[in-house]
Image (cartoon, rainbow, N blue to C red):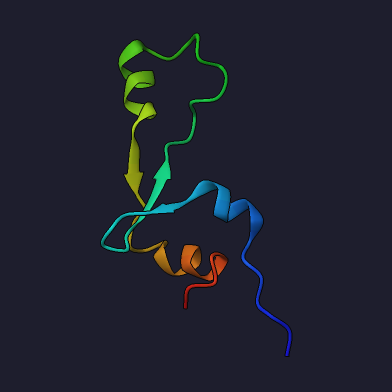
Length: 65
């Protein structure tokens, strides 16, 4: 049986905390920034955790079942 490969796009986009939770970056911070407020852009810079409802999908992409 072949090895299960990690999704290459997912391994570039997600990282882990020390307790095993998955971190992600906010979307909407790459272009069309002129119409967004300073506060909105500032809040998009920080990382956040993946929601528990999406955790199964992310773990499948990272081959962590």
